[in-house]
Image (tube, rainbow, N blue to C red; front, top):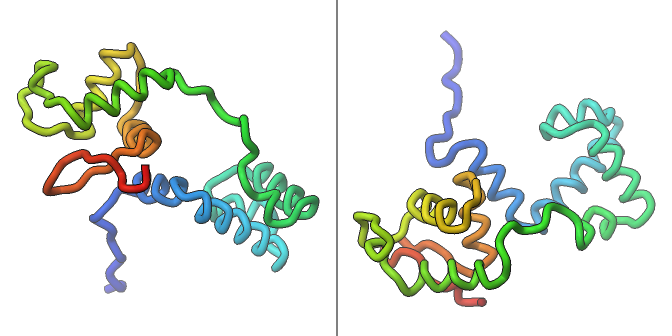
Length: 157
């Protein structure tokens, strides 16, 4: 009989990865660790397999580190997909989440939840956000969930 395998029940792997990717410090540290693994002698393909990314991306991080040091491992500004929602859309979402009840929009709930917000945002703004994206969006607009209170404004926003 083999040893029992550790199980994670608190979060799904995608949610854990989302947490890792939500903090730029973690992201840069992960990239630096990739560079470190290559420096220790692992191939870019071996490192890519460990981190679940393409070997080309590993070589890109190594080249950027070689050219610019740790600063080269940060995301460049102006990159990535442009937001589907305008700044006024985001402000409206923030206002609705913080000041209005879901019942006003036909939901049989007293507090907003991630799935209800996702449904409301997608129907109101004709978007096709996935569940993980709604939490990124809430973080972006300065809203966090507290078990006792529901969604509230973050202290630092």
